Image 1 (cartoon, one colour):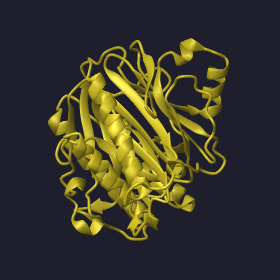
Image 2 (image 1 turned 45 degrees about the horizontal axis):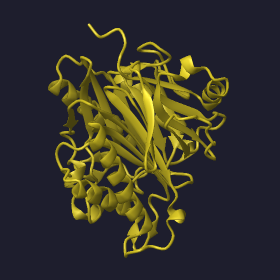
Image 3 (image 1 turned 180 degrees about the vertical axis):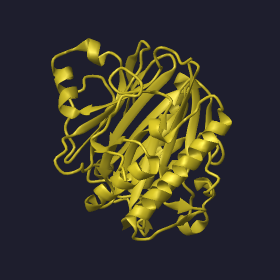
Image 4 (image 1 turned 120 degrees about the vertical axis):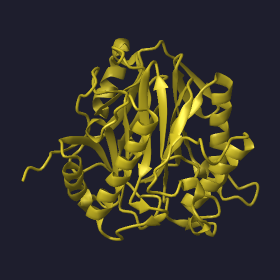
Length: 365
């Protein structure tokens, strides 16, 4: 039997509601907030007191208001700051985030592109914090603009990958095998923004048998392979939790279904299903299922939102509610990327509640 109250709970709510709670000083409502991210275009300034909340400039579906993805924990929590990182921690879990302005870095002091240098410094700060506090990285979210654009003779996503890997190596961390889950998406504006979850527990990396591990990609995808696992599996207070990285229409190491968003969506979900099966093999009592996961869906072109939603409903075979955002994906030929998590509580205080900003209703023939 699952514990009555999970160490982690995910809630998605309008930014206006979060702002009202903060403005009204309802400490009881915010006291259990670990941290999170709010999405709007342009990014909304957040009056979040000492809460680590990332304000990301990202376009939502037409007619949808700014939305926040908020992590809660019932543990006693305390806030802190380490360099540019704002964080909040309990005995078991920690959430941190930072927003960095590339332009504020001034003239480069070496030959590295500014994004690469900033990424390395950011991840070094994160590792310093986690090492000092005794946490293991569980899941990263990375957002920065113009992810597919070339600058300094190199695509910006590739610059990011070099900086991230250099930080791993500088701290003596493996860049293959047991590495954290992650995603990297192109935002509509702003600088480099990173959010992360960490835990005082062993985190097990989960790979997808349908895909080459990202850290083993061949050099055609850049001079350094991306440093992330397909998913992270962790047991917190007797409860198995799964954090699936941004997942796209890639089999082996190659993009499939160029220009076909419906087929790319189905391939994304086939990959997620394979990751879930592998996680259940490693944690047989977990029973992760596609219809109980919380999803976040990044779509390159807004006109494809309805198609992606329809394909998700048909593939999963049950009503699905997910957060939908417009974002550039790490490869220019990818039209959609989907991330997911499960095993934690979902919704406003109870497991299994529907969340999201765009309902994908199951289609009945």
